[in-house]
Image (cartoon, rainbow, N blue to C red):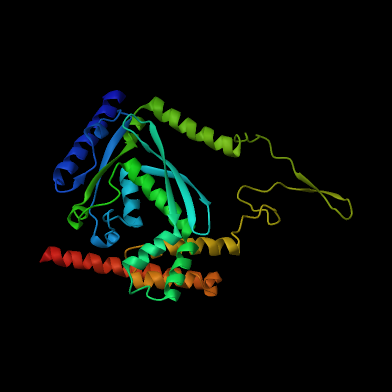
Length: 341
């Protein structure tokens, strides 16, 4: 079988598989268009199905609907093949942050479609909306002030998250919100375009070009590999800085370490570790496995002096990850129980 035929056969198999997945999930909302499956034979269409649960969505918002939470949007991003390259954020006032995310998605012909999305987060407006939505929760001036300050504290990250989620929806060509609970629980069918790796590697010429390209990239970073001399390597000379005496030392054997080499590996600073852990905890607190009460408690804790202690942050991160894991195990167990019934 010729290489060209191998490419076509693998592409055809991928298309048949994609169509079968769509046919098996007719109850889901399909975001796959017929042209999405007609890729060039150097690429293949990959279809995936996401069946969300109610906890993966925010509460209903008037005039907007029901919006997916961050973990679900990340699953959508992966299923649709969306890549986010960077997010730029600027602060315009004490309450306003504006973020712009840049990314792309591979199209059926193999080209990358770039796009960007802008999101503005206003802590004051968000706080006032929350006051109206939950009057019992924010009944006093102190409670209102505290909530407003919390929104200001995480204003930058909320703006960045908003821009990234908006970009995912644009490139994946999905609705950003659902009107009814029945719609959001139907599930969704998404597609992305992957390289036809098996077909490409079946061609010796293309396989060789790929290997050469990989080696070329390595040489660009590390330089060309030195050709080892057939004769024994010359001894190394060292000068004693105090006496000026010149001594010769045999070259190190392969695998032998130089204990006095000054190429010390980079070690992350304490400040950087704390900042990274704080960001990871914020992301974990957004998970559906964290209750609203624990989420508020966690965000409040991050504003205390304890949150500047590395060990305390590690301990808090471990506790939250454990709670999320237990939540998922309980949800899976309950799901299996319903299936058995």
